[in-house]
Length: 193
Image (cartoon, rainbow, N blue to C red; front, side, top):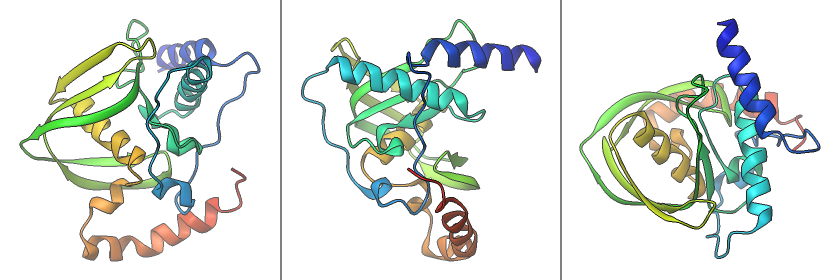
């Protein structure tokens, strides 16, 4: 456990910006979480800085394995992912304008979200996906996956489209979570964005 924490801190330190700042994660109830992010037409140095700061923000949370720009109040189509964050040899994935091209199958897995702390739910999603995106260097890539990465990609792309994982639940399940969601909204409403 101590070694994992040490590795996480190493990744966090590596991705911290020069000022050492991380973003505040927008919490459930913040209207920006239901807004659509805009495509990035030209990748700039600012996008590199945002991605680095997003990674630091994600690594600063012990359960973070993905983060969309909308979760930090930036309406640009940018996501960062590190599903194997404990592995020092594993490089994080940074995607610009990710888009799901194809999907098939179905799986139900428990999901959580940094923007909705302390809440998890079983979510049905396609099992296998094909995603197109660009890297920070502008290279066009295709990712085909049916592992945890496929799940995280769908979750983060949903964020870019203004969709939260709880939006995939039936109305009945959403209704059961209403008091917990109200509690989360009230608890985090005092946190400045």
